[in-house]
Image 1: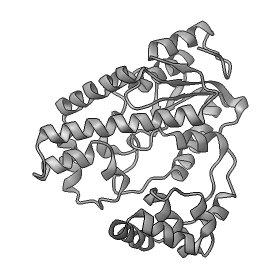
Image 2 (image 1 turned 90 degrees about the horizontal axis):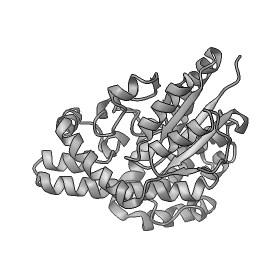
Image 3 (image 1 turned 90 degrees about the vertical axis):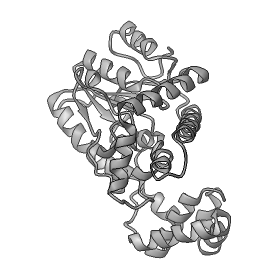
Length: 314
């Protein structure tokens, strides 16, 4: 089997990752693989800004829009899907360019992931109902009483992680911390990585890109896409129903708010999400070279002759 060759490109929403990844993959004769947790859903091509025809024409793309919105896709399932793509790419000698904004995906890809148990849906639903009724602080107290080891590592405001820890404890009788201690082997080793880089535009430029891109999404049919999703009457707790833009536009479509208010709230949510992504990159990807724009990243790639060295400064 040919040695695996990988390029990793991370960045916040609207930073230009899709274009950069497609151009790098084209230069290497490789493929692009999605590393964004929302771009896996086929129901939200527009709202999640999945690659456009111009990008798709540059190189083959994988794991974009391949999951139905009724499914609860997870990082564990993504790793299974990625593993199949990597085997084929290695056999064919194709370099693989990962691009996305989900930090946990990159972390699991390069460091491995704990194998978590299957938890009955009714257990999680019950704890989510308690979270909604009593709030995260109260639920954190319940977790502290049942599983203090897990509670110590979870913020009192992090309702989703609290619910998950309680559900795992109830379903298995073991702390989620014990499950997390048994990690799988990483799919990508340091020796496999040709290059890694983070796209981090200046904040004001990024926020302007976010706002202009959302306007473009609306012009291309984002409202119709959300309306079609609502028509399916899916569980509101599904990840696809929480994608940025979906709750805001859904409230307009159901008559709760004006379109102007929905747009303003969606743009605010996008900016806040981008801020969280940038915080993750700065805190978790400290050795990744940072570039302010796709063209700058491509130029660095060209200067290195298409063979970056891990940790090279831009």
